[in-house]
Image 1 (spheres, rainbow, N blue to C red):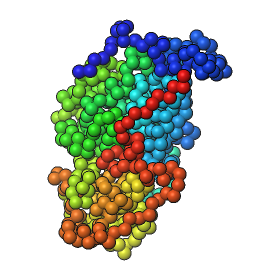
Image 2: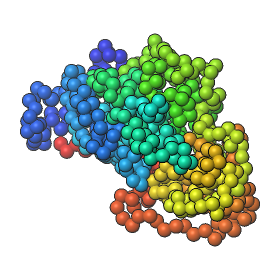
Image 3: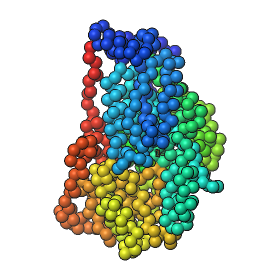
Image 4: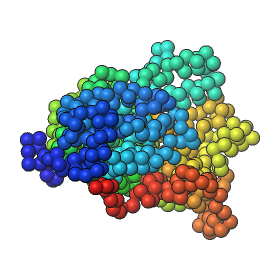
Length: 584
Ligand code: FES
Ligand code: MG
């Protein structure tokens, strides 16, 4: 077990002259003089900052991001905590990645925020960092960047928004939007109802309050030990959220004094526990990509096979939409993540540290479940195995994933003819054309929607059921793609097929009418076409032209890796030294 410094271990405390920021403020010479003069310009007295840990608060607040619109206030609470503990807080605005508004998909920009995070923390006089984020990609982006710098770090999750309401219905973000949109397409509700739904779906600041990608990743962050205990489920607008932010500010100063670096938390054991947590929550498939990328930045090799292996050891215990019934506020009052993890102690590594406790065991001590319908007993698990299965086969030699707990069970073993769409736009144009004569047995195939082909691997994976089948009552079909799927989506959707079609993966060679076989129990996705025929098709295949001629997109297409390895940029994912930027 790793040696962990305890608070009264004075020998472990960093002296002011050893702080990283001392290089900027405390050394002899012109540079330090200039930095002190410029801090006077900011209005601070010497005794307000000299010799104190400088804490960077990286804030993804923006007017356009409804999930983070409260984070400007929360940064103030973090500062309160930092000041109380004797640190010196400085807030840095960083890119916001709004899942709703950013096109073609914020996934295109996850690595950009990771780069920004890393370079800001490295190039400024920072001793420790508090990261404010939560809307889907922001959590992995901030943690990937921070892991590459490896300073003491605390993550402050944005917190879920309040539950949605419409008439007597409780609405979950995303999940109920898709549901009612399908009802409208099926002619079951009209424009009046839709206008009411528009007002009721998202009632407050905060991230999606289902167990979508945001809740999954913030829970993973808490399981990794980088948040204070219980942080991830606190509703964004609850006063407890502000107190959690202040507590995080208090904590980070202590972590700097104890020199507790992020790498001491982000170990192989921590990532295994985060995977177990995500799977037992029935969380988003996006977590597979993000955790693999985050682990890579921590020098930990995490693979698709680790997900499949761990999935077989954990049941799904969280009764949360889209796979279950409740929303994040219910989960919070049922005890939140500490209570949830207390039901998984047999699979967790309890001796590893967190930002708040010397061991995860101590962090979970006393945690209690207050509602066993929300956080189930193992004897009443929602599924016996974790929520994501990893598939292999001739269509996905490097793997694919399916959230089988959110699919209609009869489709989990299914063979049907493929209907291939080369682009999302083509699919949108033609899917409702009765001339396609689709039946519930057809397998909808979308390609060119992967990391390079999308570009950015958009959340197209829940392909729409044709209108005329919806009207017959069909609500699920087998769908396969190299895209991702929103964490709030559901259905028998095979995702993240690797390698993607755009780079010549076998998905590029499928033709309409080919039989496709899905067998989740056997972890198989198979195209029933002979190897010889596949070779003939491969010889005739030509790669599509690159998407970008210049700019960030050109860097992206040059560097992006495939889904099974986390879609990081190759030059960011590789190991290598980066010098400290001290100027003397
Ligand atoms: Fe931000 Fe869903 S849109 S978390
Ligand atoms: Mg989402």
